[in-house]
Amino acid sequence: MPVQHPRRHFRPLFGRRSTSAPQDLSAPAPDRTAPVRRSAPSHPSLMRLAASLVELCEAGQPADEVLREGLRKQPGVTRADARIVSHAVFACFRWHGWVQEEASVEVRLERALEFAATFAAQSAAISDTELAEFTVPAWVREHARIPLATLRAWQAEPVLWLRARRGQAADLAQKLERAEPGPLPDTVRYAGEADLFRHPLFQAGELQIQDVASQAVGLVCAPRPGHTWWDACAGQGGKLLHLSELMKNQGLIWASDRAEWRLKQLKQRAARAKCFNYRAATWDGGPHLPTRTLFDGVLVDAPCAGLGTWGRNPHARWTVTPADVRELAAVQVKLLTHCAASVKPGGRLIYAVCTLTREETDGVCDAFAAAHPAFVPSAEANPFSPTQAPRPRQLWWPHETGGNGMFVAVWQRTA
Ligand SMILES: C[S@@+](CC[C@H](N)C(=O)[O-])C[C@H]1O[C@@H](n2cnc3c(N)ncnc32)[C@H](O)[C@@H]1O
Image (cartoon, rainbow, N blue to C red; front, side):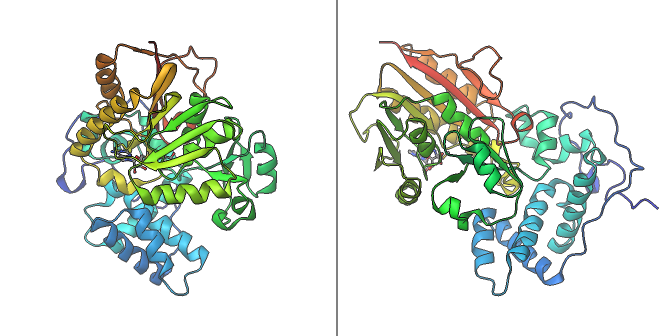
């Protein structure tokens, strides 16, 4: 006998009404008679732990931090246990729109796990109407037009992407279990369960954990060996290490960030990756630049509202606000404006954000372009679709790439 779908019919939950028209409801109705796989019976003590971590997230701490700290402090929690707990906590936020009005965290977790299992067994069991209504908060529709295919991709478990040394993707994939080369040079899709941070290949700097869309940003930058680059928001160095690899460790990259602790992490990662052609300096994003150097290329991988990461980080769907979007868009324009002075004539300025709102992406580009006529849009090939006509602004959707959503724009300085 088919097991019942957790919610057999689409209806607004507990009297909640749709606040705007769903985006694209042309897809066929789901097969409601299809059998539904229920989640495996969960260990009560692990579910209690998951519930306590969900409560911490709801009190305002980011989920990844809560999981890292919460699981580290638990005596006797094995790696397998930690995976179960993480899966449950992320499921709770991934399916939050469906389960948020349940009375207790425990019931929400249980229901969210049922939705996750249902979706994994047969994604069409969740209708487009429900996806449009419940995947993200209603305010998002005013700021971004997110395709249904991306909403659907966000409800699945995210892919873990690795970056191999140049030309080593096939070799790396062979050395790891359940790994295969990805769609871009040096990308590897990993489905194994090893703790990669402890893996000897990671310790030896032979692999980086880096989303495929972030790797595509490095390919758009395409720095040449011997060139001089500035990675203005270098953070913990994900893109810096890629730029250095593409430059064959030759030339110089300035790495700046306002967070000193991130630059410390960057230095550790750079040492492991044997990346030596960089110099790190704190910079608060203001008009006092860390250097007077004029660069062949400047990458502004700016702080953003992060909508593009909502597949990997579903908790953020419910914490980001429209005020964050407005504030961050203004910060992005400021960063681009200050960095522009450091691009040499003929050099390129690259703006990258893992977000999807119009105010950030196109809004920021329009504001920057209007004030900087010496910067002309530079059409670039799309790394995911090299036969497409090159374009100066590109948005890579998660359902197309299997990675984070990412927006990139490129300008060249004329005089
Ligand atoms: C998207 S993250 C960078 C990620 C990094 N490029 C990587 O690939 O790993 C944005 C970074 O901007 C930094 N940031 C935020 N506000 C800033 C500001 N006003 N000036 C400079 N950096 C800032 C943050 O500390 C954060 O590390």
